Image 1 (tube, rainbow, N blue to C red):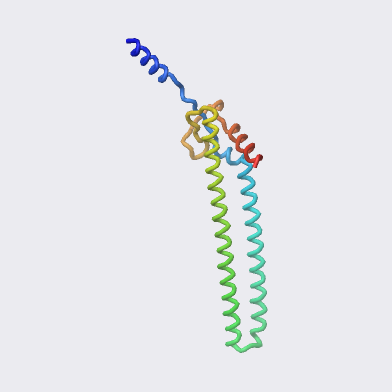
Image 2 (image 1 turned 90 degrees about the vertical axis):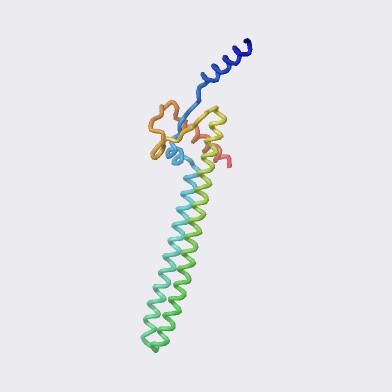
Length: 169
């Protein structure tokens, strides 16, 4: 009988236990994360450098094509055609190389972005464990949390943890 009372008391205590739930505005979290800002800035610089390189190469080929047209007037039709074909082949090879560079840059950007998202999720989970949360929900556009009390919003705390951790690196 005594064991039954203890068991009933334990079940009663367990059923009264409250889940600790909070929410994070994911868009605000990502927008305020310095590591994300630095990654975007670095990608923007690479994209601008690539665009300058591409434009510069394009100008060189335009000038070469113009020179070729000027020289072609004094050449036989066959010689002019051969030179034009050679120029077109070079332009095609350079275009393919530039396209490969751009694709590589995009792949690297995507890998870094995926790594960033994974890190944020891991940090939110770590934060939740440290603070004793049962659930941390993502709030914001496209999320399943339609309402959350402001007192349950831990976005700023998690953002501070992320940025503090990033500063240490």
